[in-house]
Image 1: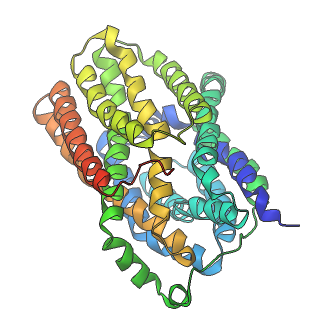
Image 2: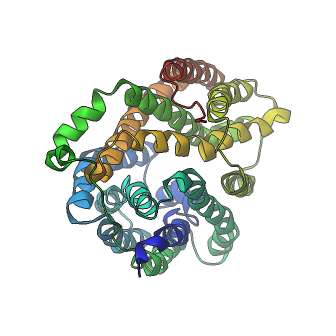
Length: 390
């Protein structure tokens, strides 16, 4: 029996246990309780980002060399150890160790899950279902974030904040059950030339492909727009006078909204139009946030639309330009570019907000992301990238 046909199901079952669904809203208070300053908190995130960047491509190569399912199975116990130990740690340097271990675990999954899903669907003649199934997998992760909020509140009230991290570690252990059910999917090489390609040559071929470059830029800009908004959400809510106690409730509501979008919105038609909508929403939402009007709080749902729906059509098109044998490495390369953009844009935006105001940061970011995404989209129209095939 071709057990790889069940990989999409097991990836969807595994997704909720990768979402840090319980501890996400309480990470900063956890660090502050352990005596870390905000500067040290941001330093920890920088350490994770650098480690993740350095490990991204080697992690993809391991998956291509030893197996995509193997790589995901290896990542799960590493994440379990790191998260559980994090909850019992108290010092900055202990946290550094666990951040490095989490970077290793994430690098073993980043891009690899995409490669495994695509290979599994291709082997079964169902590659056209990638966008729909990938959205369903994302929906499971978003739903877990919403369901984890009431659990987190109970743990914080009756146990401790650090218990939320331990709980996420234990949930990761449960997720291992589904990760270990994954099996390697057949890989196909389109020609003898593809078989002789090295990973380096495959990366060069992708880098010199103009359509692929614009796809990467479009995906990276839209993804960065929601990433930056996430880190600015807390000061934004505070500026509107929203009590901190309601932040978790807002997180739950937005996660459920993203889960609904991912599960119910299909993108088999009018993909080009959808991409134009995401480009407009990415910038317009920032401008609404810059107004500082409480009645425009609902506008943040625009970024949730972008986060939930933009990546799957772009990833599907990008994978059409990737050699099957090096698909995990190539997807890791794309994720690497996105993380580089995160790493560069985040400090610049933080500096801009510190020197000017939160509203100015929103306006500049909104205009920048919409302009860059629009340029990429115009270039892609020349390639007829998102045009429907008759």
